[in-house]
Length: 109
Length: 121
Image (cartoon, each protein chain N blue to C red):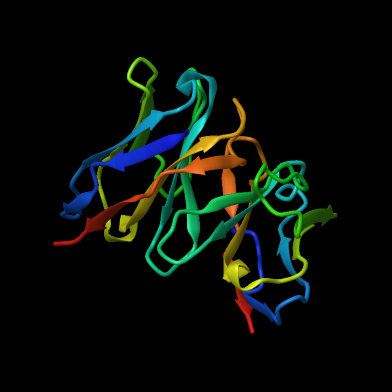
């Protein structure tokens, strides 16, 4: 159950866009990819599910995609409140095991 | 409003046991898969275990297989995690989380606040 690979940190100025990648094996990053935001001391929050779908209440500044073995989360129009850790997640080769990425710290400069 | 409230965490010696509970409200509990996810303070998320809505399908991470048991009581709207043969590396905050689907264990749309488990002599 190898973890998905994410960059440890990304940063951007307010209003800019940042993209976080999430790379796994061909059997990991499939149809069911989710992204979570976690602020310090808080529980994770679902931001994206089923690769590209946004739960109600999540700003449309958050978008996601997948190409081959890599999923990506893009935050457009970066805001101070977007500063947090972001984790991707998917099934690990089969539908009986789940894997998370190592997490990416997003810093708003 | 969906609420998940974990309890049962605490300090336990290596080799000991602990049972975590997660009381759910605000949704039809039996209709959704549930999961446990843990996080060592300052580190990343680690999936631990999942169970389908009916409770007859369970899944575990290799790191806990054979030591932890997930279960649910749909009459009490409660999820459990029985943890045996605890090791220092099991020290973490344990979150229970609701799946968006049943079955389906990747899209976790609601999380509890977490309960801290510390394994130390």
